[in-house]
Image (cartoon, rainbow, N blue to C red; front, top):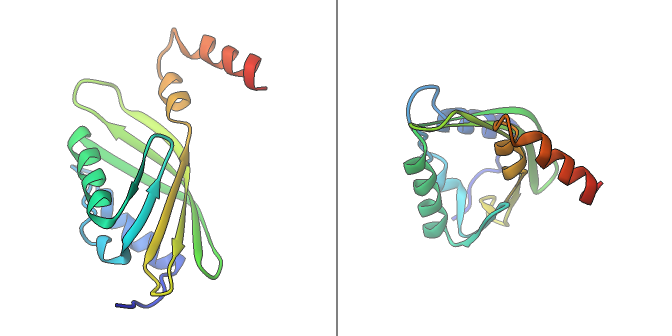
Length: 146
């Protein structure tokens, strides 16, 4: 099965339907754009296969009361789209946690997403929200990593 190539406008339109301003995210309308052999990787996990990717999305949905994403920039070349975003995870018992990151989507020969790589600093963004911890964490990171 081949689909029409996705553009940056398509991605902006589709992703804006995914992350609701109220309630849980719904990825069901974007799953047809993913290849059955999708490889997804981020800072904490790597999953292979569409069923495993769908299960990953469901786990994220189950953990969050609400999830918001704002795409702040997006660029495209022949077989890739790269987007920068701010994601805010809203939990029942914990404060909202904004995370900043980027996603690289790679398209296969059939124009479906064959690879998705998300880049973000999970711990840094979370630790920034803990008043007594963010300064020692940043001092440690500066001392050992530059």
